[in-house]
Image 1: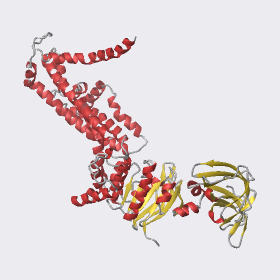
Image 2: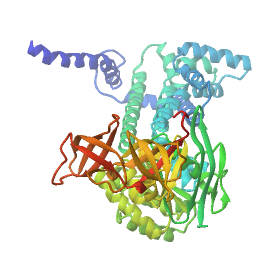
Image 3: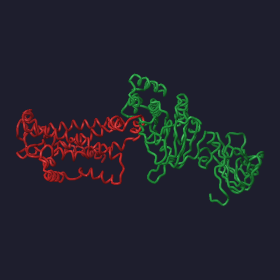
Length: 260
Length: 362
């Protein structure tokens, strides 16, 4: 009985980790496999070389990066401004407005995607990078807004008031005091938004045009022809980026804690 | 007239349904240490924020050096604030915290550095310039907050319960330091506290605030010995509230009043028949055989409570009321419980805090 109590939690963790990471591990291993078949033939970096010379994938990758930078950047500004504005104003419908502004997180992506499709068609905006950036910015805002709002709620308002009291204008106060103090929240929210934009398939599928393809969309279309080790290599690289991002976020969180 | 540096004129402020300030007027003299004392929720912090410009009054004016600053933004006012929880900038080190106001005023670097060093010296934190606020103790943060506010040489320094978060011993030490700092620099302090002892031992004058109104403004002596309202008498020190009816006024001004089946004497002006409430400090009440003040009041010793330095005695009066007396603890002999005693106090030591005509409701 005692033995069971000791081993059961470990077994649980092992199974959980296996379910989560074994499939990923398989992808990583096969990206280094010297054959297209599902058997180990020896180590190679061929698939990575092939990937590097693949113009279409390169273009899709840069599209995705451009899109993620632009939309998470725009969302960072809009979300931060919104959170600060909301924290300073008091009106009756504030609660309602706050709920409305974060609901996009909860709406199924497929519905959002269709909504953008219909909306842009109606406005006759040509589908492409512009529509992608608009759509991605819209769904990125709540990630920054919520993060910054939580940070602001934990801030002592008298710190900003102390700056005013010492002679700062409201603008100076924002740049000298408020922004540095909420920066970790802006950064972690933006990173999250960046990641969300980077891997989005559903909304991009509806919001893009024939000339522009993003990396996730391209992978999706490649899969229709069957899994190639090239895709495995690509996924491995992206996994690496994600792990790096996660590590960065952890560091940010730690520094924020240390500051308090 | 004495030199007035800050005039608070008829300030009203309402938050939703709560009246935070209800017509407060105070003239603050140049170089004085003025304390606003009151229980939490009395409006003292709101008043301070209005002086600083962080809050706008619904009515009334704030005059600084004779100039109406009511509508000025806080950054234009020549006042600085020490906030209750210090409000140091967590992302700046001590030196940058203190020099922030100087940098805004574009004081040359060398001079700013010199002034910061002077301030650090003044608050006994020399050598702490490179520390971050999170690396300081509560008392040290407090000193940084004071240095940061003083370095800009404000006309008036506002302090919002600056010692509230410190432990008792450190608080006592900081009280002394603050007081001597204020005397040395000659800067006008407007100081907020709910701690009566702090107010009594630091201030030149004390204003007692209650429910948004100024109950009494005066020197610590005035406030303690001559309270003018019931609240003022009860908020500071220990008082007996003596409800008595005027029988007679002597030609020399001494009143004779009926109280608890006997008569007592009091100084003051009143018409026969008037009902007065007197505040009598517990340490002023004497009991025993002595009758030198012409009182005709007796009672019995009901109980003693010994609290180390003090002995608190409860006296039972013939009509069932009780009086509290505090005397030195550790004295040789306690009067036995049940003893019949004569009760009196110096008529000059009672203060009239309420008066009404007979028949008028309390």
